[in-house]
Structure formats: C-alpha cells, structure tokens
Image 1: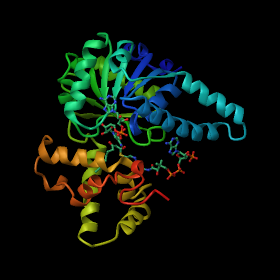
Image 2: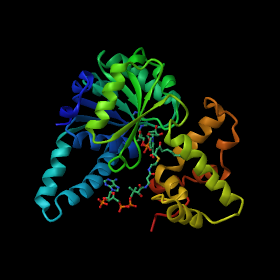
Image 3: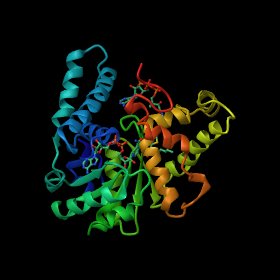
Image 4: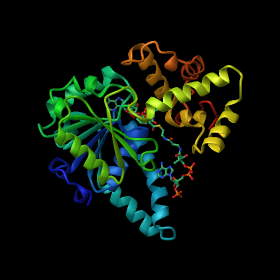
Amino acid sequence: MAAAFSTSSAAAAIKNVTVVGGGLMGAGIVQVAAQSGYKVTMVDVSPDSLDKGRKIISSSLARVAKKKHADDQAAQKAFVDKVFDNIATSTDAAAAAASADLVIEAIVENLATKQKLFAALDTAAPAHTIFASNTSSLPIGDIASATKRGDRFGGLHFFNPVPQMKLVEIIRTKDTSDSTFAALTDFTKALSKSPVSCKDTPGFIVNRLLVPYMLEAVRLVERGEATKEDVDLAMKLGAGYPMGPFELMDYVGLDTVKFITDGWYEGGVGLKGEKLVEPSETINELVKNKALGRKSGKGFYDYSK
Ligand SMILES: CCCCCCCC(=O)CC(=O)SCCNC(=O)CCNC(=O)[C@H](O)C(C)(C)COP(=O)(O)OP(=O)(O)OC[C@H]1O[C@@H](n2cnc3c(N)ncnc32)[C@H](O)[C@@H]1OP(=O)(O)O
Ligand SMILES: NC(=O)C1=CN([C@@H]2O[C@H](COP(=O)(O)OP(=O)(O)OC[C@H]3O[C@@H](n4cnc5c(N)ncnc54)[C@H](O)[C@@H]3O)[C@@H](O)[C@H]2O)C=CC1
C-alpha cells in the first residue's frame, strides 16, 4: 500500500484522491495514484471526456501490464482490473471533493477557470483536504487566492507522460504550511516519483528553462537557418534529448504551449513583454487551424497516417 511509504501524518491520512480533469495529464495522474493503491475519483465535464480519460489509462496500463507479465494474458488482465477497481469517475467535482483527502487539479491552463473551480471546491471539501494544482505556468498563489485554505494549497507539477516521467515539482507559496509541503512530498514518493521543490515562480524549474528553448527552436526555423527535422535530430543526437523540441511541443500540445507563452508575455510575473517569451506566429497559426499536436492528429508533424 502506498501510504506505507509515507512519513508525514497528513500524507498517511491521504487515502482518497480526486483528480479534476481527465485529459492527457489528469488521466496519467489518476493512473499512477490508482496503481499505487490510492482510491481515485477522476472528474471531467462530460461522460464523453471521462471516456477519453479511461481510454488513455487503458492503453497506458496495457503497456505496463505487458511489461510486468510478458507472456501471461490472464495476469495482465488481473493487473489492469485491479488498478481500475481503485478508479471511480464523476462529472460532479464538488461531490467528489467532499470525500477527498487530496484534490489535484489538471484542467485547462486558464487562471480564471482554475480559480472558479477551486472556489467551488473550497466550500465542498472538508477542512483537512489538501488542494494542489498541476499548472505548467500559472502562479500557485494566484490560483490559491480563490480559496480560504492557502496553508493547505500547493503546486504538484507532473510531467508528460506521467506514468513514465519520474519527476514531480512541488511548489510552495508563501502560505503553504510545512505539513502540507510534507504531505505533498510524501505523496509524490508514494507514487515512486522523485520530488524537487521550487518557489512559486514562472515555469518553476523545468518549464522556465524548457519554454525559451522551445521558442528559440521555432524562431531558428522561422529565420530559415535549419529545418525542424534537422533541429529535432540535432537535439536528440547532439544533446541526448529523447525528443527534439518540435516533437516535444507536439507531444505536450500546442494549445498548452500557447497558453503558457501568451500568459507570460501578457503578464507573467517578471516576464511581461520579454523577448524571450514573445508569442510565435507559427504556433498561433497552427493553433488557429486546430493543429494542436499529437492529440489532434497534426501539429508541426502529421500523425494521421
Ligand atoms: C513551450 C512549451 C513548454 C511546454 C511545457 C508544458 C508541459 C509541462 O508542464 C511539463 C512537461 O511535461 S514537459 C515534457 C516532459 N516530457 C518529456 O520531455 C518527454 C520526452 N520524451 C521521452 O522521455 C520519451 O520519448 C518517451 C518516454 C515519451 C517515450 O519513450 P520512447 O521514445 O523510448 O518510446 P517507447 O519505446 O514507446 O517508450 C519507452 C518506454 O516508456 C514506456 N511508456 C511510454 N509512454 C508510456 C505511457 N504513456 N504509459 C506507460 N508507459 C509508457 C514504454 O512502454 C517503454 O517502456 P520500456 O519497454 O520499459 O522501455
Ligand atoms: N500537456 C502537458 O504536457 C502538461 C500539462 N500540464 C498542465 O496540466 C493541465 C492539464 O493539461 P492537459 O492534461 O495537457 O490538458 P487536456 O486538454 O488534455 O485536458 C484537460 C481536461 O480538463 C477538462 N476540463 C476542463 N475544464 C474543466 C472543469 N472545469 N472541470 C473538470 N474538467 C475540466 C477537459 O475536458 C479535459 O479533459 C494544464 O494546467 C497544463 O498546463 C502540466 C504538465 C504537462
């Protein structure tokens, strides 16, 4: 059981987890938490979206099961069924939060939308419930300000694909209490992930470095200095990255990339108007044409064939 790894009393008390948003990230978080023995409720806006989330989990679990029980289909099925036994689904975030010890939000990267959600959850959830956001780029303090539980609020930033990536960034605001921070750290370890901590600053550690790198890759190609294929190959073979920047942007989702860069350029603390994060016309055009990357079948590359 996951809680056996925990050392903080708050973490030991975490049994029921609610994840709001069952997309690329939310589904992954639901999966790893359920795999680690937590009872998890996945919340999304409609039965259709929940279905999509379940499909993401199924196909990922199938890969894990195949690895665990290579030649034993019955054992593969038993493994998958056991994880799904820990997963419930709901379209009612408030009801799910009412029985949660920890709520992790992984909905669209928009401050007002996240604030509205958390304001509603704040009245529905018990006093002991810890709230966490998986935001890539928004200040955790701004999201938490919609609630009256700033001391029980932190950032829990997972990486894509969640089942595979070992890092979780834990973000403390000026109000996050020591016991909340300890509980989030222990929860992360219980998922067999490695925590790092960062102050509540734009992009935390990874995205603060990754976003300017990706945007410069786009500008390099816009300037006609190299093709995107050669940039990707160069960064894989020359820098040892598993994916080149264009492959990675398609993997993350170009709408998410745009939300992040626009947000920082238009008002991100300390980054407003910075050339480093100036929006890219190439990305704007792709998003306008619904070419959002792998999830829509087309982005910088075509995935439809
Ligand atoms: C300006 C924009 C800024 C954007 C920032 C916003 C986003 C954020 O806030 C933060 C982020 O997440 S940034 C993105 C971080 N992620 C990365 O950098 C991923 C880079 N890619 C990789 O690591 C590998 O290509 C990867 C692991 C994906 C795939 O590996 P391979 O290429 O070797 O492919 P496979 O051989 O298929 O997989 C290798 C092993 O991993 C297993 N696996 C892959 N995906 C899985 C999944 N979804 N679920 C379960 N298992 C999975 C796969 O089975 C295989 O396992 P082994 O057989 O044991 O090797
Ligand atoms: N895509 C990535 O690589 C990463 C994204 N993130 C962050 O995670 C969050 C989610 O991103 P993705 O999973 O990529 O997005 P996504 O678009 O794949 O999924 C978002 C899900 O949230 C649902 N949703 C939207 N509003 C909702 C609401 N009010 N209540 C319940 N569900 C709602 C949508 O229906 C959708 O299923 C964002 O804050 C993003 O910045 C963090 C790390 C990596």
